[in-house]
Length: 572
Image 1 (cartoon, one colour):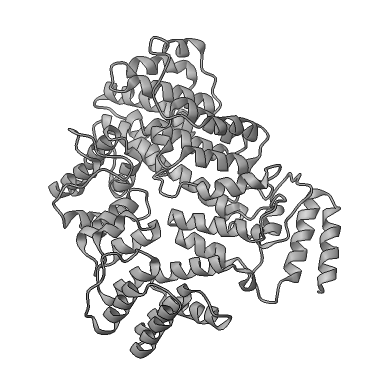
Image 2 (tube, one colour; image 1 turned 120 degrees about the vertical axis):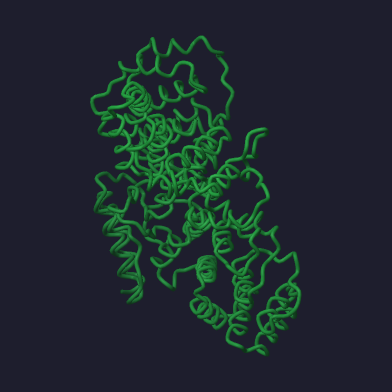
């Protein structure tokens, strides 16, 4: 197909009805691709969308590439309808990477992997795709990143995509793929220093010490600072020589040190990217304190299975500081300290449910409850309600819901409903959990209605933090579609009219409501995710959370709104 016929096909598409425009323009894009290359998923996603109203439509381009089908959770292909391109360009790089919130990570992942029509703008082609890939890297979602890049035709990939893909291969131990890419990049031009550094690593791995040292000399001639790089090349070749403390924790340097059996300075865990931290935590040649520091951070957000953290905790005795950004409070023990003590006692083997309750309770006290849920996930899987006191369900069922273990959570509620001994305590616990079950749409709450909240309020009186819990549950029920009777709101008026808490920025508040009301799906999700930030569901004020949840629901993101509401209630 010629370039002129491709342009004619595109112009014809734009004159059609919007839905047909997406299909025809997407087909034109596929036709113009070189044989054997992958195509963007615009057409596949367009067929599953009922309403598309983008006009004019800019769909022919690499920025529309997607890696999810509708069945896999892709957002609508018209999710950027009526959204200014400048807003997307401004906010996409600000998406939170290191968040322990499963609801936030799920929505963010789907937003970044969805192939969608792009509104017109001044940005150069490919920039949006680059930013989406970079955001996946910041999340530590390397498998998703590779999936997205694989959907991009080889001749349409930017230098940034090639480097991100190579970084992911280096961390995964796929040196052969990284070496092939470096060779190809240098063959097409002089290449930047990065590709020469990868080439030197490949030469050293292959035993070509002279070739590797020649690459070091070439880099030096190009003006690069090669002191640390030369030391790592020497360590690969001879196993000797000191490694400088100021080695940056890049994917390449970590891959080189791992291959050489040498450990970087423990300080690198404070500045490394999440994907790098996962590799550090799993690198057996590295020092145990470094692996623990890295493992703690990535296990706290679910990137590293907790089972891989437990042995690292057993190798060290010194108390750890609080989570990054959430300092441990004194005289309370940090959540990690409670986790370590629980492991040392063997309670996780003898009574996993009780062990999980201990760590989750510490998480509530230390404002890092979402992190705690990731730490105890294996114990929750093996914990059964049969031998547990009813009060355990009050702590365990919310954690199971946050981790999307709905069937297991319902089993705990069933255990309360059928509890013969201690029936009074079981009934009270079930009553306390039903508002959360209603938000999550569990079957036990199908017959529940807000009129029963008066009984729930009585059951909650006197419990620590009851006022905030009541406030949050009422607000999240309302945000997810329930009508709250006036007397229930009035029952909270005896408290101060000013509630402390972190508020959503006023500019975000002003944009979220109209974006959700107009069902601008991508814009609503983007504003909500950036506004929530890293620890949003745990520390954001109730009023701000209600605005976020109700806006997501108005935009049609019902499941995401409910998942966030469950986190908001459970984490406090």
